[in-house]
Amino acid sequence: MVNRMERRELHLGLNVLSDGMHPAAWRAPYTDPVGFMKPSQWQQLVQVAERGTLDAIFLADNLHLAIDDNGKIDQPPLALDPIVLLSTLASQTSHVGLVATVSTSFEEPYNVARRIASLDHLSGGRAAWNIVTTAEHRASANYGARPQPPREERYARADEFVEVVRALWDSWDDDAMVADQGSGVFTAPRRIRAIDHHGAYFKVAGPLNLPRSPQGQPVLFQAGGSEGGLELAARHADAVFTSQATLPDALAYARDLRERTSRHGRPADAVRIMPGLSFILGGTETEARRRAFELNELAGDRRLAIFAWQLGVDVHELAWDRELPPWLFDKSQLSRNSQGARDIVLNLARRERLTVRQLLDRIQSWHRLVIGDPEQLAATIAEWFEAGAVDGFNLMPDVEPSGIEAFVDHVIPILRRRGIFRREYKGATLRDHLGLARPSAVFPSGISLPSPPTRLEVEAYSLAR
Image 1 (tube, rainbow, N blue to C red):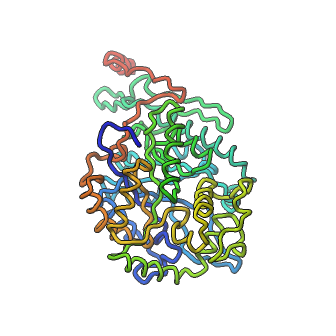
Image 2: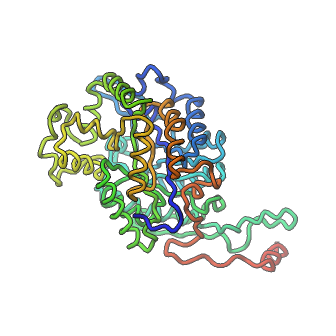
């Protein structure tokens, strides 16, 4: 259980993938197949999220276009750049957080620090960066076609990447910008400094060309459940977007992460644990299962093909009504995708002896799948939260925008009646929503920056000019 003195509050984000989480979402008769390219649909989604007092809208990313052997794609891509899209949505909202996924594999720390800090300034303190590493070779082909380094090296690079970004965010003190028109003093002396980083992967002089952002540092999410991902989260993250299929697995993950976080000198509950939660919602369980059946029929064997790709196997090696092939459970068989998420699926399949069809009735894109009515969905959310396995969830509706509208209209009121979810925002920043303190500016070594200049120092600096 989480040991917080104050009453815990559930945290909910909305994870949006084009037209919804289900592979057949774009084919549903109640959605626009190209709505993911229209500003009006995104505005509707983010405004519904804010109406429901959700913590944040969470955008994944994909750095390549998957084209099949026939030269076509059979579902909408993740097409829009997350930071560009969230910058647009910032002007349509006033409270909901804005989480952008950016990979450390193909970027430079200075660019990421600047873009996320810009979003934090323009949104009034609602920005977050979801840190991922990228293993997909098709993405690498778009960025110089260099061979992808081993998993351990990708996470070592990511760790240094985050250190540099955080140092750049702290290269201005909170009070560095004076902007005194009368005296002509724009910045206080000695309140901006280079970071002079020289590491194994990056050399960055700094400082950042932006003042410190409204949140001090934008919120850091981390997605990934492998050994490297857990260590990265324990050291740096404010929140994690993880994959969990069962309550026992979720409890074990929470214990592991909190122990690691403590070993890094942080409070055990410093990181908000928010696994993905896929759902298909109906007015009754019968209606929900009918909706699931109709979507599954539209998807056909596409669901099987996606599952095979995620597991890193050929689709012909899987059969709907058979268990997974035994060799898949060999720990030496590493996935090209998320190793932590893959292990969760394999653990569930082995523990309960599930066929592929049964697995895909329990999980969707690595994440737990709930099919039911509002009371059932609220009950499963409350069970995991009250057990201390999670701090909340990233919601992954089957079809957008109808999925999140139904959740806000019918599930949120139940969670509020249970007393575990807010009725209104109590602050304006994403850190406020997540119950995170505003960090003070420190160097990566943990040495605090010098104290602010005195009034006499500022006046002397002004006279000298």
